[in-house]
Structure formats: C-alpha cells, structure tokens
Length: 86
Image 1 (tube, rainbow, N blue to C red):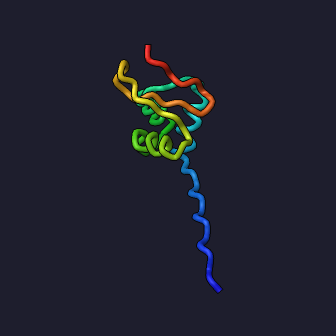
Image 2 (cartoon, rainbow, N blue to C red; image 1 turned 180 degrees about the vertical axis):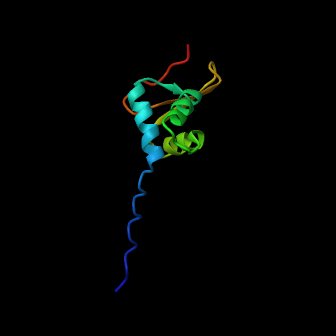
C-alpha cells in the first residue's frame, strides 16, 4: 500500500497580516507604504509592514503596484479599484 502525500496544511494568518488586510479594506482606496506603516504602528503592531505587504501581495491576499510618479508602492485590498498613473 502506498501512502499518498498529505496536503500541505494552510498557514494560519497572523494578527499583523489581519491588521494589514483590515487597514487596506477600511481605507477603500490605494495607500502608500508610508501610510500603511504609519497606521500599522499607531495600532501597536511590532512587525515590519514593508516585508509583510510584499508577502501578502505574493500570496494574492492584497494588491500592490510600483508608482513611478509617486516613487513608492501603492497597496490596495481586493475589490478596490486599481490606481492609474496620471
């Protein structure tokens, strides 16, 4: 009898990840890395939001785009209109 490989268990979201998702959802607009970082620290999260934002983007939980005009990354929650360069 061969043993089938077990499915990889889903990683539990941390409080910091949930905080980032909540910040972006509540904003209902694209936010800069600076804006997210400022709110992140105001609510007392000790983690580095810059690394976390990119991790969540790679996992498809949030969206992010480099803004050449603003010279920063813009982040937004799913369902929020993607920013356009003016």
